[in-house]
Length: 328
Figure 1 (cartoon, helix red, strand yellow):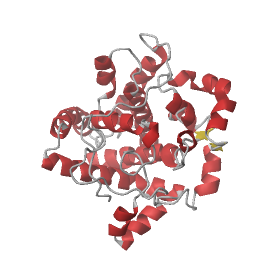
Figure 2: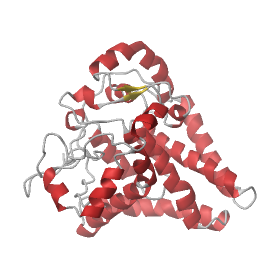
Figure 3: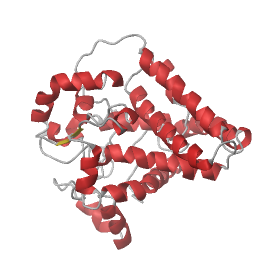
Figure 4: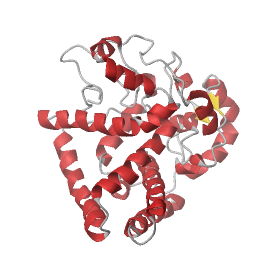
């Protein structure tokens, strides 16, 4: 697991996105949110009533879709009202990731000037030389394997959860600002999920977590695997995966990632058309970092490393007592 200090619960403002006219309610997203929660209730309630080989794969897809919806919601969809959006996204179907922590960390990630930086970008997979030197050989080996798509999905689906919980536990024990409040609220919402799964549906909690939540995390890691790389030019750090009509809808077209970073206020259902309009400009800006499909990503990187682990700028840790990322 990584031992990086977690980012406090106060976000730093992300770089402003281009202006975009927004509806008060985005009806397609509201319908999809309702359908996703209904599907989750139905598939978990179906445990013991239909075969497990149907329940688990469908549950994986539903939990993965819910994660995509949470990503949509943290960017201010589907309404203009923060409190309404928060209520729509806060139910923790994945159990391990508090909505508020995800919101803060992901918005910090959208500071594109610091994108891929091992200290300033919470979603970076790069390391600085000082941190790398402190890792034991087994940890280094496992991290290198996670630079392949197979390793990222198979090992990373557990690693990501474990590393996050380890760092958050340290922050909770230390009493970092805002962390305890976020987690105590999260535990309250988790009770609702656990009561439904274990006591209403009579599904063992371990089966729900290992059979649905962990694989759903692995599915989401397919999306994030090749979407960023460390380069001097900001826009060249953001990839595009075109023609993904299988996983693309599951990811709410976040595979068109350069467009998302440029205009996160565009709702998911407008992305394909907006991308077609801006395709040549986006590809020119990101230096041609384009994959035709996720099958191409798999062909290139299933068992080959996507990039180096050490950040090319050779970043050094912040000085002791310096403000940490995320503190306004």
